[in-house]
Image 1 (cartoon, one colour):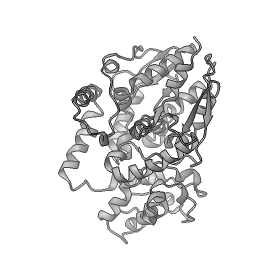
Image 2 (spheres, rainbow, N blue to C red):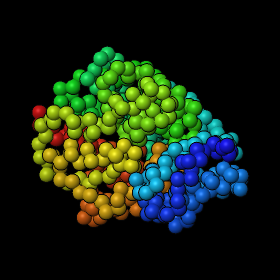
Image 3 (cartoon, rainbow, N blue to C red):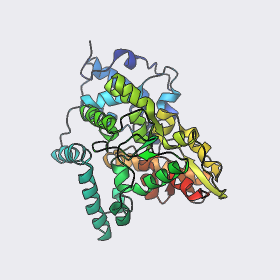
Length: 390
């Protein structure tokens, strides 16, 4: 018998409240509050699920303040699936009271993200607003390029390629040049590439994190149909890749499980190919592991493997703690996001010897977040493309 949150009892009760997750939780680290930790949030979930506590504003705030980095999962000796608990809980939360917020979420999640042409149109408007100095820096919008927006990726659509390059929604609109770098590097291995057919733009990751599971499932079905066959699906956005690798759990079908097995992070795929020739650059770069690459995909080692022939790699001492981007988290929780970011920037600068280093990050959200703090953040694909010995 489930309660108002519809949580799986076995998953919920797997937590033994040992507290080993606490040092790995960014919101606990910056607040010191028990309710801001995985252990505290699970205790609150239990209280609501057993009808000992209501779904009130305090409970909603505790759930929404989680950045969903899932750093607690590898640290948990009981293997608690905290990400699944959080997604299910958020899906059960009542709609926000604010009409403005409800309208903004409806427009963003239901109207813009599933329609790539509309997202591109909105990005053009944002580009114009930037040129007219109408976009405050706190919004976190990256510097948009008309030249990049005007040019397509120039990859075939459909067919029977050696690998698909998943282009996504926001990344294709804001960081399309990184897709070009990825395609160039992948092409240097001799692989024949293709991009998804119509309908394969948005993977549903942002929807899933926001508790919009039904919409995420519908988008997942579209993505799967856009890249048929058995060729690997290469993703250069760590957040998208993590969600797509869990389509099997999300949809529960044999087709979804088979599709998830095909998904590879860009660096993960490249590490298993005939390596393109790279020239040693002598440049030092600090590694920033996106949470969903490190904690969910567990593919962060591949980034180091593919960059090592060309760059001198430096590590942070914060055990891969979150940067505070978290998809839409930077918009919904700006104050907490900033405090988490400040810690990450401090760790990155320390790794770089005190100066602002070049930082490599395999997730667009992290790149935008770090660039907003004055960090020169680049994608592994961009760095490798610059080092190609052609």
